[in-house]
Image 1 (spheres, rainbow, N blue to C red):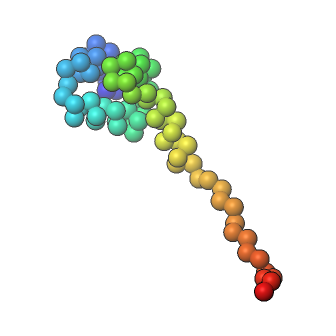
Image 2 (image 1 turned 135 degrees about the horizontal axis):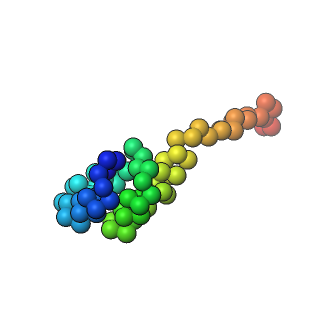
Length: 77
């Protein structure tokens, strides 16, 4: 994915079994795949948007600020 030509990558997307295509999807997010033309090829051939998947992964890994739980000190009976 990272070192092959675009034509080799397109052949892979056209003729690879489904398991390899699933592996390409997951690796394109994990590595991440920086080649924009290969990202577009994945979108066109597999319908998988690598840009959105990477953005979602980054957003989900960012720490979120949780509000502290406030309890009442005085309770009415």
